[in-house]
Length: 310
Image 1 (cartoon, helix red, strand yellow):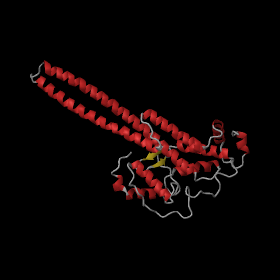
Image 2 (cartoon, one colour; image 1 turned 135 degrees about the horizontal axis):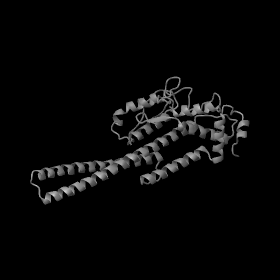
Image 3 (cartoon, rainbow, N blue to C red; image 1 turned 180 degrees about the vertical axis):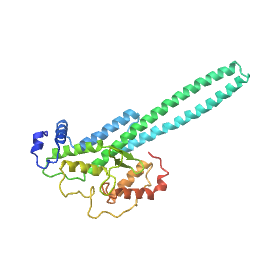
């Protein structure tokens, strides 16, 4: 049954929701009453694959993850830069030859053949410059587009992980829980933020552009932002934290024991570091996550410096 304002107002445990948030929940329920977050997340990745294939004219390999597919497309697009370098060399060579012919003509050594050669070279140079400009413009545009889409995928992935670490009030109906999580997710994604390529983390910002901090002056994480949204709604289960995605009674000791031998790019290396640290018991929502992550990158800096970005 679709959610209504009357149903939400009568539901225990939703006193922390504003009228605006309740209205948003009703709208979400009407549009997609039975769809779960996991299904929508899968559909989102499928749509991303379709857009990448359409815009990049590069097909996804069987079994290839969306993140790997997008990284491969970006590498292919970047290889086009080599063509741009070739056109630049051609431009410089033609320009030098034109200047040489101009000098000969100016000195009186010119003839009709030299003038014809000069006109021909001028035409070739104009054509080469046009092609080079179009190539560079296209490459710059596509790199910006795929960078934005890759960051969107990363945000979706981190929110999905963070959702496994929150517990909503058990008396809430499942449909209400899904709608609440979807609303919180949308609010997190709409929050002002930038992606730090070096650290491989999102940095949420205040209106003046300064990083948002917690009480310990650590930058807020995706998990922190999600939990804050749910706390504001007043729908979190009191005193309950799911192990492995939030706090821990005995957090693991600091370790930088990671194996990056299979990494081909800095992006892949960061993904490997994240997976291996989480397998060791760390979580992105931990207060010391950035310290642990940074130590792992620092310990492998010599190797990371040899890798391309993506």
